[in-house]
Image (cartoon, rainbow, N blue to C red; front, side):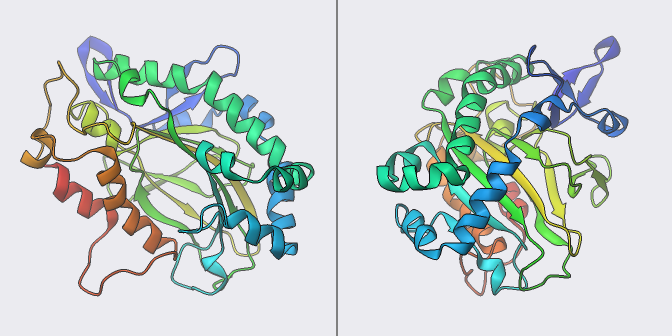
Length: 321
C-alpha cells in the first residue's frame, strides 16, 4: 500500500494496525512498528465464545452436520486437518451474512448459548464500525473512491482453530504462505503468536506479529483497483506444537459483479495484463481462480495433476503484463 512519506517519498506498506476502537485511526505497520500493538480490539474480541463454539461442534457432531448442511457445497465446519498431514493444520468455521440467514431458527437458538450469538454480534459490530473507515482510508491512498465497488459488502467471517490435535500435530504449518484475494482482511488473534508477514523488501524473510495485535492486510483486489498503488500482504501462520491458537478473520472483497481493473481516473503505476485492462475479469471469476488454490492448501479440494506453482504465482501471471 503506497503512502506519501517525507519530501514526497513513496513508502510501500500493505498492513495496518488499528490504534483504538474510539478514533478508528489506522497506522501503517512496518518493521519496528510491530512492537507497538493496540490491545483494545484484542480485549474486545470474543475468544471465549469462539473456543466454546468450536468445542461444542467437536463434541456434538449432529449440530456440526446440521450447520454444514446450510452450505452443502463445501460445508461450514472444515476439519480436513484431522486426516491430511500436508494441508494447513487448522480447523475453520466459515460463515457469511448469506449463510447465517440460512441457519434454521431452531439451530441458531441452540447454538446461541454455545458462542454463536456472541460471534455474530462481534462480526456485525465490526462490519458497521470499521469497514467504512477502512474503505475510506484505502480510497485516499489509491486516489479513487473504493466505496461504490463494495456496495453490497461482499464479506466472509472465518474462525480459525490452530488445534494441536491434527493429523500432523508436530507440524509448524498452521497456514501456508499466501496473499488474500479480496480488498482487505482484518485478523484478530487470541494473544498467541504465530502470524507472520513477509518482508516486501526481502522475499522469503518473515516478520512475526505480536499475538495480541489486530491487523488489516490488503489483498489482490486492492492491488488491481488501485492501479498498483496499494500492495498486497503475503502472510502465513506458524504453529507451535502442543499449543492451541484461535483467530477471527473478516474478509472484504468487491461486489461479485465488479470488473477488476484500475478504477476510473487512476493511472496504473505498473503495467497490468491485457486481460485486466480489457475488463475480462470480475470478482466472481477472480475468486474462483484463487479459490481452487486456497482450498487445495487447506485440504478441502484436490488439484489436477498438471497444476503446479503457488496461488500467488498463478495470480501474478494473470494480472501483470
